[in-house]
Image (cartoon, each protein chain N blue to C red):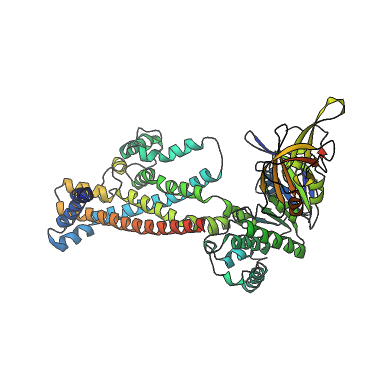
Length: 270
Length: 330
């Protein structure tokens, strides 16, 4: 009993110290000069550009992650081929590599002195570069969610659909997609949270051009470095709220997935 | 429609699942592929269904007019978990190209017809998770029949069900087959199921066909030791025949007689070890003079007359025995 209270107390204390207090501080600081200053900071043209750029990059990264994730999960769980475990290792690479390194890789490839530099593709220090960096750090999330799920579900239902005369596309749309939709959504949520919050890789490739190549995290840093604390915290609070919304959606989904798993277990036991 | 399989081989890595298999199934026939697990029966069925491809392109299953429409029933049902019973059965009709797709009313009519065939009219709105195993398997069968297949393939369809439900469904399947006369191939490892349901039985072992024949043929005239052993229990004697050669002699438990005196030269002295009297026949386990364990089945009346007890000294005589002369190698 004593231990229970102690452990719970410690956990709550830790969370408050490192999570709740800073989160509250962001909001307090953001609203220090009143709601007007808060709204002005968000409506600032540079901030608007950053918000738009972040949302654009995140949506493209999510779409890329979904397409790649479904293809990779399908290939890994449905076929046998040499080099499969190597492929799985590569899918995990973005988790293992520091985002800064990822950004530097982009510079190496697309920079003026880089491999593709002479082509002047206009990737670096522009939106395409930021999108590529975001995709790099966030693409494994959907695949990572789907692979274990599809492994567990097996292929019999798809085989049944094909034998009943369904085309490959019909089988995917009517059988596979409904089976994996919750896992897919979960992957999308994690992927978008990562994509919106990414700092390191984007910082290297963006060039920090105000009103052009700044994402929300980069804009916050610039404002902060200029001692414009209210604006910095206001924009940061937006990112924090996005994160909270994502967390909320994730919790809801987890609850739903648990319920489905429990139902599946009852089914297996029946 | 008839099915012909010619010279089909299949291996998975180093494992040989099928070795030069030939099989012909006549239109309207119900054939059982019977064998232990790993004998290749499921692989053969999946090749016929088109779910698996034979190794050499030369042979392969041959159907008279292109690819046959196949109804396939999986051991674990493979029902679409996110669809109701009704939608599961309707699936094969709904995915047809618009030119050949029946109208919604026609689909409904057909599904209701099938629901009454499987006697589950009242469960159309349920999800697979709300059904019992036997009900799920009947839905899977109705779903396969909805597309009016030319061939029905069943992969251990009753394997996951308990004994009582199995027996009921087995008889129901035979009755259904007699009504619709569809060419049907059933995979099973249960010899009783094969003997009871099939017109012909294909006994498989280690990727090869050991014997093809009617239930009577494979049971009473097994082609070799494997078939004899697989289709029911069997006693093995090592007997010396003229010339001093040793022969393996097989006798079914119900082809043996127990008596207090030796009845012929082939009678063997044995001690009763165990008696199972619960069942249609009394099963007696004995140990012969030279330490062989023997299984004998006798009718209850005979058991009563003999007054057998554990530990009793008796004589066991075979009524009918089998000796396989051709070399049998695994």
